[in-house]
Length: 454
Image (cartoon, rainbow, N blue to C red):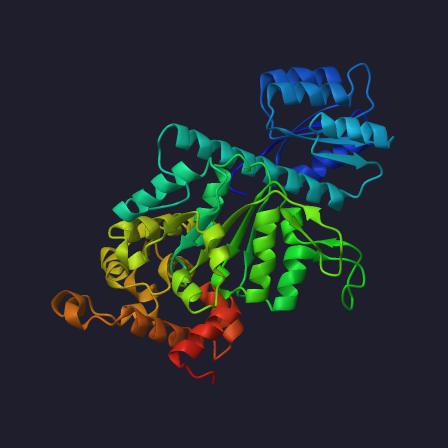
């Protein structure tokens, strides 16, 4: 979680139950306040805001429903989990209508409590992030978490701010690793759908049969091993946003089905007959030239026009002059926390090499390089010696004096893939993980460049 400390209030009149909850949540390093009195709980809520409240339902004279209502009136974004030994459907329905996150029946398992608390705080974190994003938008600030001050990225920020509040479909164009999903997430977070799901799906990672099953769900006995009436991602994302990455790789037969959903706002599960209504915003992304794909009859023209209402073109990292140091230091701050290290800076010579490299893997490759450097260094400065060999071997003087001889992006990508494969002893699954792409995408790159699979 991004937040350092989560404040939790426990309201439970049974001493043993309250102490068990205290123990398990303190062990998870949460900041815990507790009381056995509903009246005292109301007083604590008046004094401070909590991230999460766990309250027993049946207490006198102030019960859990009173605490739920008071908490939601004071702090609408605070999550509340109701606990009771007298679970009924009616009381659960009332609690949910009043805004409770979950209704936990006694006796419960402590592992169940851990899981539900973690999920409730994740929701709380997302809510806070969405609020910060919208406040930043209202104040005219740049969008958080999308790092970059180059002119090209400033234009992207401006377009996101303009289109996010609308409900139009968006097509994001850009090379692999440029951050297309991050842009899609930002659009969702700034939209009126931000309180509902954001679902991402990579169209290049599944067979046609699996793609249909994942997106549309299936009915019982639709295929071997099918479970009864399983919802697909599109149905689960109802009222939210669907991000379809690498839409250019979607088979034509699936494009027909997707077009119907966009036009009719309804789907049919695999093996089913009944139409199911869905309300979705679609954001699609691709590294391909879709107009060219339409001309070659590999992509449906009608679907192209449905998706391409608004286009955002993401520049490759090599064209984002001045953004590399910002991104490198942004990733350095992130990775220091992950590895629990204190690193002051990236050495100027190392930064100059990062600036000189043309980054065929774009922002994703830069993040991987910084993560590798943080993992390997034992100093408080990132030096050249912890950069990958294929970057260390590039002479700064060569870049300065012989700019006409700088390797092309394609040559550097080939060198990069070969270097990663060598480090992984030819294991394509591990290589794809190191590169931050899926195995299918790696296989396609190897095929395109004629890189041996041995």
